[in-house]
Image (cartoon, rainbow, N blue to C red; front, side, top):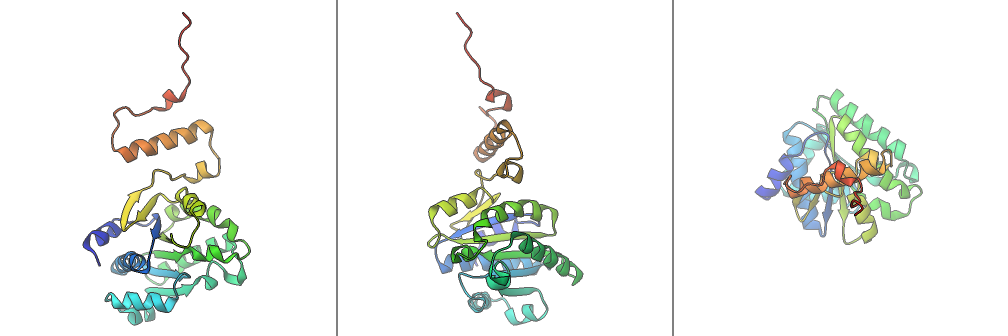
Length: 237
């Protein structure tokens, strides 16, 4: 496990919702190992939902990285399931049902003595064409209301070689933080639920985007303030 990657993952906290774009199995494995390893060290229950790869493959690369998979599974610290047992339970995607499943998983983790839930899911189930899969973007947006209010954090894994660019682009709108090429970044394209679901005015949406850009640049010099969004006409001469 790379030290730089492990340090970045260690900075994640409950309430975080992260999107990871990966190009190959090695890239994915490195991120997942660091993510799960950190959760186990923090006494969180780690729930992994497999789809792009099988649960057996995930167990294999976790074990290959030195994690005692059999021990962690037996004590309930690690839970490996497939998308057919989670996102596509009953053969379709139901946003409300999935939210309920996660909520129950958090409560069960706490009741079992863990400090919270660390969830991760391979999102290639979207490509199955299963009924309801078109609700995935809305579901990701709702996760930004779920995680901050829960003793949990989530990592959504997107294989860039399998998704069309329009889907990958849409998902940028629904994740506050993004990991690309094993580098974790604040996402300047993120839209919080009030913006995504258009619960705010156009001015509030614009001000949010400006603040994201200003934060990304790391400077306040020359920052466009909310008042500057008002049009100013030159005085008549």
